[in-house]
Image (cartoon, rainbow, N blue to C red; front, side, top):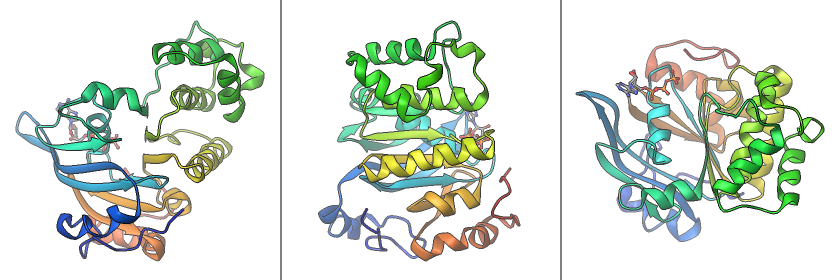
Length: 268
Ligand code: ATP
């Protein structure tokens, strides 16, 4: 994984469009590019002029308090809602001009995972695979094995614990074989083992070249696994941290929000 140094970023670590074109893009494959992305809900700006570039194979973490705009951003980037202004290019497709191509090409795990409770784990994955053009049986097994659900593959999803549901949700995302995945708080509500399992999975997927864009409320977690961390506050991307700065995330978060938070506590 290439280390994304500060090329093309301004003093807040946020993309400076003019320099970015001549630096980062020549070295790294851009997978997500947000351009002045804005979302207005009846006059309330939930997201304001987001400019952000995410590269192939990196784990980009979005952090921010409840209501900061994380879900709104993800919903726009996966084509669930339209931006009021701006655009984003995902896997080469514009979310404004080619929203169907965007939806086909990305994986998305929403905050509340939707599963078919009366179907088994395997049937849930198969159903999603079929909706996306189908895959061979061995791919379904591979994905279930990878997220550790192979031994419960014939159990109905309705009987699953929160951690198992979350893992099955991830399996449904992976079976599409997306180049980029958007995961909205994938470790929220999980016990320590469940959290570690998902974190290890994200690390491995990134090593294999998958781009991970995910949100979290846990500073310690993003410190451990993210290559870059974006701090979103009141709908604005205030900072992007990378390298050694990620270790100072709690301090920097406090500077921006005036909220004092321990690395292992959850931001609210
Ligand atoms: P959380 O950590 O609680 O999930 P978040 O950072 O994901 O929060 P969003 O869900 O994106 O935040 O919400 C950002 C703001 O936009 C909030 O003030 C929310 O109330 C508002 N908002 C989100 N969706 C809508 C909507 N459909 N209509 C009106 N306001 C909305």
